[in-house]
Each structure stands twice: as C-alpha cells, then as structure tokens.
Length: 277
Ligand code: FES
Image (tube, rainbow, N blue to C red; front, side, top):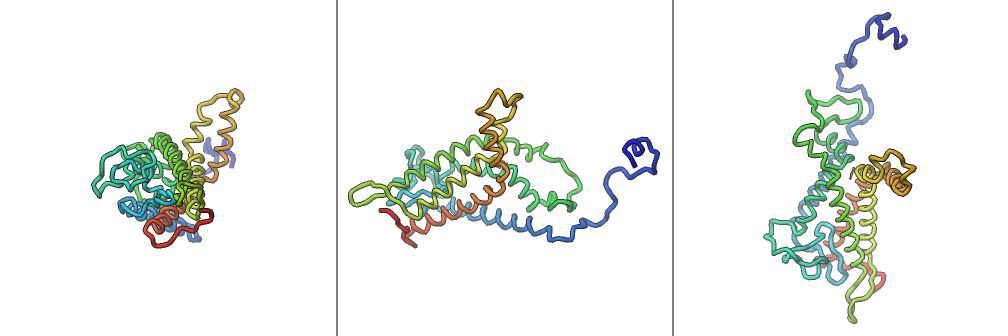
C-alpha cells in the first residue's frame, strides 16, 4: 500500500493511533534492570551526599590541604581553620546548615535539571516511561510545560554557576599539592592528590559535555564558517556530549570516592598514602 492509497482510502482503512495491544509491553528482555540500577545508584548518591553535607566534620586535611568537594567553597566562620580557601566571609552557621550552602543548591539544581539525569530519574522513579516500548502507568502526560517541571528549563543558568564551581574545585585541587612540612609549605603528592585530580577531570568532562554548554558554544549561529573558533569548540563539546551519560555516572562515583577518602584521612582512620613529602 502506498502513501497515496492510504491517504485517499483506496485500501481498507487502518486504525488511527496506536495498535490495540493490551499487554503493557511485548518486550521479553529484562527491561526493568536499567531503571532499577539507576534508582539504586541515584538513591545511593543522594543519601550519601545528604548525610555528608550535614556531617560537618572530617572534610578537611590541614596538613595536605585536602578539601572535600561537598564542602567547597567553605566560606563560613564555622569552617575548620585553613579550609576557607577564599576566606571565611560568612558568619558562623548553626549545625543544621551545610557549610557549603553557597554551592550545594546550585550543584543540586545542575544535576537535577541535567538532560541525562532527567531521563534517568523519570524512568527510575516515575516510570514515565520505565523503558522503551513499555507503557507508563500514568494516564495523562503534560511534559515539562507546567509547574514544577517547567523549572527544568533553568538548566542553562545552573550550568553557569556549576562552571564557576568547577573552577573553584580546580583551585582546591591545585592548593592540595602543597603540604606542610617541618620547614614550612612544600610541594607534596599523595594518593589524595591523585583522587582529587581524577575527580576534577571528571567534573570538567561532565560540565563541558552538558547539552546547554553545546548550545552556548554553537547555538544560534547561522553560519559556522563565520565563527571558526566557536565551531571548533562546539565540535569538541559535541564529541564529549556523546559521552555525557558516562561522565554523569563517573562523577557520581568520583565525588563519593573523593569525599570518602578525605573523610577517612581527616578523621585519622587511615593515613594518606604519600608519594612525595
Ligand atoms: Fe547534563 Fe547539562 S545536560 S549537565
């Protein structure tokens, strides 16, 4: 049957809309596995990050200047001496306010509104839909056009702040190459530095591969040929963008690893494995 025949009713009419299939899905594979794994992974991160953000101790190693990313930037007078790399410009906080209250809401907003995480948690927690070719349980669908989901469109603005926080994390990483020895400050290198470097590289890859970053670098251009620099940056960002999911999960792992390692060293549970000084 050709399109013309169908359009003009030359053949028996076909049903409008979807096929009348009563089963929720015809898939035979374990389609529920990815949303389940996503739910467990995201829940683990949210629980860990929440506990650690309110923990309020074991986030800084004075001798090696290791600062947990969950406490950066530490701007309160409540911060451990030395951990305020940009000065303690804010007053002391009560214990129920996280010391990184300045950055955490933006980082949370950046991740929550991320295009990849949206897909991930819509499927994992709202079953909307749970997987490809699996019907969702909801009878209506309003997309992201109404409150509160319309706020997802603020992602670009969270990106700007997250970019700035990645610069701050990079500064924290550089500062940590300085250790305090008997003769004063000196270059130092330990396992903590390696973990911090891996984490910062991951954070930059995740930030630079953001869909908003791709649009900021190459969007709204009519002629790439007239903007060769932006075209090159957009091309690089586009390549990274194809791995955005990978970087999203990688940084969840490195953030937990970095904070957990610093917590162990800062609390005296384990010593830092030193390579130089
Ligand atoms: Fe994931 Fe922007 S789309 S961080």
